[in-house]
Length: 74
Image (cartoon, rainbow, N blue to C red; front, side, top):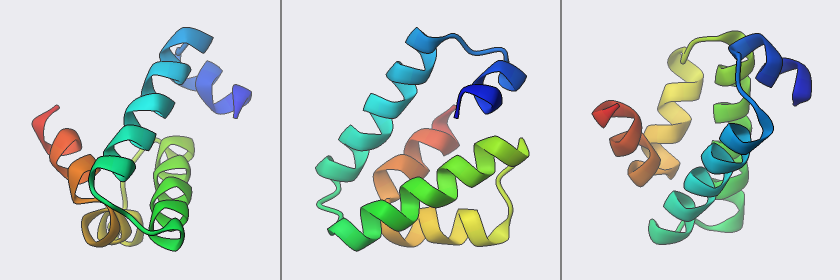
């Protein structure tokens, strides 16, 4: 959300870039709708919390390996 973006110091263009990258990784990984939804929710929660905890990480690793690889690379 906008408040989380401000707290991270991100502008709208940066948020849009991240949103597109996450969506593209889910599509490229052939995630089902439920997998994509779960991963996006967990990723958003992690961003809101400022850290990637066990449940969020587990969901992303299981449902969005492309996103997990990109996060590991960065």
